[in-house]
Length: 98
Image (tube, rainbow, N blue to C red; front, side):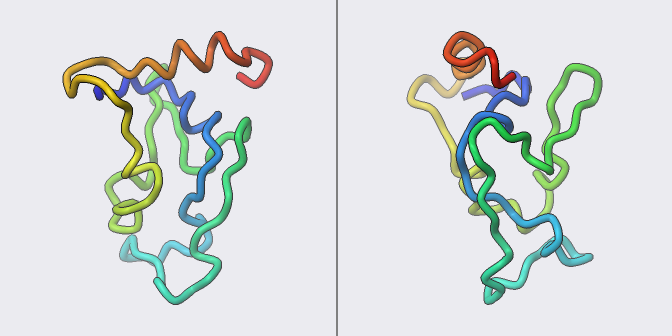
């Protein structure tokens, strides 16, 4: 799916994310460190989320520690060239959390 970069997934999904304090200078984390991942609860903004104007940007998206995370592996069912539909779902399902 094509991400519309609204940032709503990064605010509304309940996922495990890379602990910001566990990222090494080279962009990796220690796989043996039990604290290298933390829970990001639904409705709480991910600490890796930033905005460039209206576009949501993951500040660790290009780091090695992002590979294999739930965010990296997240996908929707639908055509590869279709735009994400979660934005509309999040806007209508619980606008109080936005």
